[in-house]
Image (cartoon, rainbow over all chains, first blue to last red; front, side, top):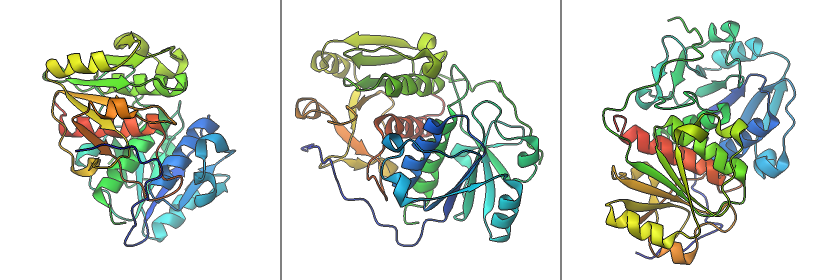
Length: 165
Length: 165
């Protein structure tokens, strides 16, 4: 085996469009949002829905800022209702009662991953609109992942399940 | 189903110690290192090996900064040799020739995950010491994950394979 660094290795190709959307409740940090944009773009996600201010730090989001369609909305419930009509399963990412362990969750191909605020998480109003909530197991301090970190892990898991799109 | 936010949900318990170590080449950014520390601590990792300056931003690393043993070394090759003698498989995280797709890689329980610098990756000197290199599929711009983001995805995948430790 010979391991030689390939800095600009060509990406994979999807055999059909990626049907994963990321939906963000108002985040405190544009850094977290920008990290999510870069990772989601790397995963082939085409559309992110944000609420509130959605100013990207382009040094963090990199080309993801241009490659992905970023829609901003004042409030999420009408958007979630529309996504639901379009056949998306609304999957929250949060530590809640009745949540599924992400290790055992089968993501529907048409998933809208709904990410909560770093401090307050997803509001009860939003939680009530979701079909499922998944959470990522935690074994140590500080007992919860950063919101962007949890999002990257969920993006990874979805893509692991749907490598072809 | 009723989804109610549980802000301080108790963590999982490992049934035996987590045998995953994270080894970082000199990183450019203490922010990335601090993010890795928080996520690794959440995953039950007990030890991180760093090179060069390893100043943590405690607002990012949170309690992970105290929960995890952080060792700093001037250079990695002697440390990697010692880990190898201790039975660790040395697994790099990088886009290289002959790397394995992480979706199909079975992590040995005793793994030292070796993370490269954000710009330059793992040096040829370090790559030559590794047993395996894994990479995470990428489908879109900017065609590579941030170093800390890739580390979180690898932590997640390892823990998915070894949920009990």
